[in-house]
Image (cartoon, rainbow, N blue to C red; front, side, top):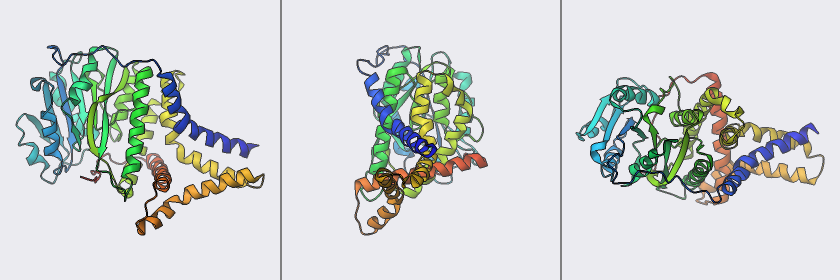
Length: 391
């Protein structure tokens, strides 16, 4: 009975996070409308926006990024761009300095993105009006549309909203890697986060590539923290303020295609996830929409590798009971072997989408497991190397 309980508890918990929870969000959202208390694009009282960006060796994309920023429909006299270079060793610094309206800071040594953002905030805190101004965080490889900034900032007329995330769309899809699978994952995340915000204002973590934050909700990011976007998002929610995603605030990002690069990135992010859990674990015990979304959307998935392992081990011992458990065990064996099978097929230029999805799922969960042990061992640095994408 213990083995039966373990198997079904793990299987149904994962099923809830990946299938039931998104379905419930759709059901709860019926009849609900997005925030309508917004600034008009011609309002004279549109807030000042301080765009903060940490960069490291972004010579391939930084010029295009800044051109997309300054092509905005948002009033340029209300847009203030601050860039901190984490001791870039390529042409990034010289390219940024060509944009005379950018406030540029080159920091010595490797500090890590969160520490660069902390340093940039020290530069702007004294000149921001915390009650009205907006901070906008973005990455160098995420390109803006002409209305990206306005579509985020318009919501800050509603005083209950303190964080607005952008809608990240992916480019550069290729069938020979994981770009389709990664894009499907991101699009599903966009949908889930939008519905969380629509239902309760509890979007579980903005995408770091583009999100806006009320200046009075800034909180310095702890040293060696990795996932700064989730840290700041949860800080807003913990203060009983709303975090939402705006679908019309579109950003474009090239997606990763190489499984090794994405494995390393997911490992790093998982270590950061548990750093955040160590700070915000009390939110699980509020027994409201916050705890429901936090548990269903994030914590269960972070613990997914352990649920998968427990389900597999318990199922192994249950195979002696009946044919059903023998079939579920064979299915799990196939799932765990899918990365090897997919690798063999890839060598003969055979790309099966469903097989690639299964392989992607297992490899990403292996990355999550590795990231957990990185967290347990202790994060030594949050300095990062840029992930190569299909630029």
